[in-house]
Length: 357
Ligand code: NAD
Ligand code: ZN
Image 1 (tube, protein in one colour):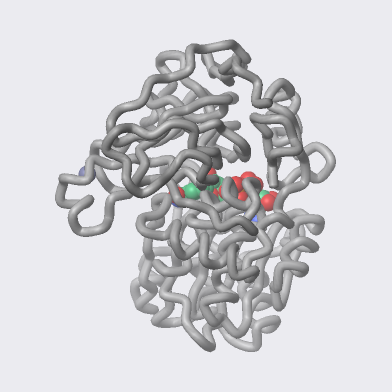
Image 2 (cartoon, rainbow, N blue to C red):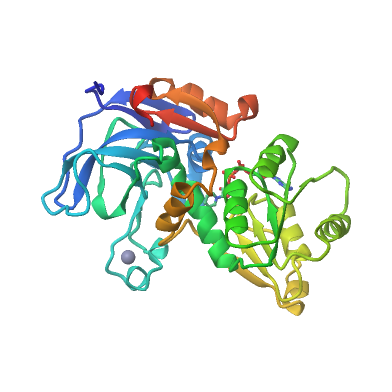
């Protein structure tokens, strides 16, 4: 039996995350009520806990945390046609207006009226029961687990990044950062046909996982090495300069390195969020005709992410290092935040564990 409380993880402010019982939400005609199952912790959740803001998104009022999630449909709004009670779904956490120019042209991630889970002022879904727009729920085939369903969220970022980079057959790709986002970008780059992928990080343990997930080369960035030496090392290792580079770290150092290492005429995609302003060798990049592209979440990428997982090509489960029950949310956040036990992806289970498959 599922518990009938609605235990909910509420961020009251900086360093103030609490579990409390809330009413089970009512649903609108186009929504479904979901019995939440798995919710992964993302770096942005930690960032809101520690800093109370990401750029212009500021936690001014208390906010329910969580957005990498899957659940089971419990109730249907009267207009819902695409789902039925009992369906296991991945939840695409951003619900756009569907009416504006961006929505209509398929770039709904840029919708000015986006309501994105756990991006203030909108509540997230780390709770037992949650209402969500039915058209932003993706039914999972029986063999795809609820954990994998939750991981479609970061995987969709990887799909979007590699689509933005236009990764193709034969490409050489540099990925900077081997956290969850770097690792999913690696998976997608290989599946989209990259012949050679090199991935860098400061942590060998993360690169070991990258190797398991198909990285051709891994490289721990040593201390006290110049940028020019790093560029040379990357080119030597690949045997050429990467024609696509994807920054999944966000550090100024990786922004610069990615830009400098990319081959003439290549593409540099920025996914990692670092300081609001950084110093970059832009003129050199201009003279080498580097295309610099931004990635903001994803749009129309969930289906591809699901296809990758359901076909067995994306071993996203390898990212999960720790499991916690919803009641242990504070411990889960500590583990993720401090990288305890080599944490990569920490998964929270909102229902008794035997239902998670
Ligand atoms: P993470 O912090 O787990 O991973 C970042 C990795 O970069 C870490 O493993 C770290 O060791 C590594 N790193 C730091 N400095 C480095 C350096 N100089 N060289 C090489 N590696 C270095 O975070 P994550 O969850 O994987 O997310 C990665 C970034 O992407 C974060 O900045 C996050 O905010 C951002 N993000 C952006 C979007 C988007 O839509 N643009 C979506 C999700 C996450
Ligand atoms: Zn819109």
